[in-house]
Length: 228
Image (cartoon, rainbow, N blue to C red; front, side, top):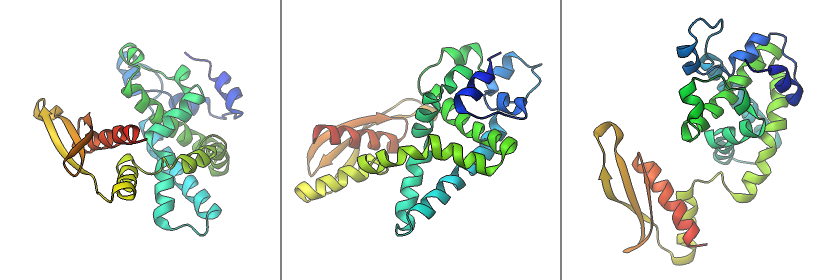
């Protein structure tokens, strides 16, 4: 079992209920191998933490940017609470070292691990809320997540790649990009798509993914790199 007091020290928080802190890091796969473990997995805490996180980020943006529209604030919030950002923040806080996973999941370091980390960040917020209340959560979120906002605004990463490439293409050539599926493979439950992004008839770049949307986003990202 991990020594969670090290994490408390690092985060400068002290849990009254140590079980709540431990539970935030229990992935359901851990219980498959340790069915007699005295705590449940973290998914209910994740559900709660997701709502607390959304409220804290929304409230901060609402208070700090009184002149910004609902649409802009929604985009900024989405960039702050998406899986990629939460994974990054959870990684910087060394949550990886405290995860309770099955032996199989411990070996999986790709996309699956990123989702586990993002979900664990939410479950930790849920635990912190139950143990310490909303104000402590608010401070934690401000200290570790909201500090990323200036970078998001500077790089305009709150805009998805398709929107950014469309803006760039219209500005430079007055053309709206179009997307076409170039290839489709795999069984029905795991289709794989290769999508091309075109300016008029010219293929600029392509991307692949397990949905058309994911493939389009990757194609747009590749197009942005090419057109830098």
